[in-house]
Length: 205
DNA sequence: TCGTTGATATTCT
DNA sequence: GAATATCAACGAC
Image (cartoon, rainbow, N blue to C red):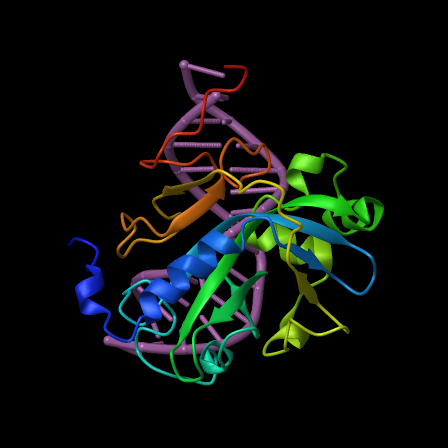
């Protein structure tokens, strides 16, 4: 099944989510304990997407995904890990951007303690890993992110636009080939190399 | 460097 | 019961 065209998106919910997923590359996510990282990898999920938690409508688990832009949607994955989304769109849209990887920039000692490794490339390179590194869990489900307290999302000071590449998604079985994954081209902090997208320049080239 | 597997909570069938 | 937006440990090569 091919990804739906923008003609099927009259309200623009999908385009908002895709644009948010792209724009969030370069933003900083900071936790109150001083840990912080730059977002280098995201995935967009909307209600038209069989792989999205919002595909079958609002439930107790995914209610935060319907709160509207700027809220966090945090859920437990495989019974063990937590994964964090940034909700996009208007209340009721059920659209969000999954944060898949960060480049750690502050509080690396605390991250290493929580993660049990010193390797900076293993601290936040994965949706479960970044939540563990920043201490994100169910308490953060539904909180607003664009405020001064708690989890904070802050925009970059952009000198130049980052080179953002698009690829197919990871860790899902339904609609896995839809090009809704965004990543900072060439970043060593991705959860996995980009596939099927505009390939970033070869390292050293 | 690969592929496989166990751990474990919540949701949906 | 089965599936899941995951990760780490382990064994075969």
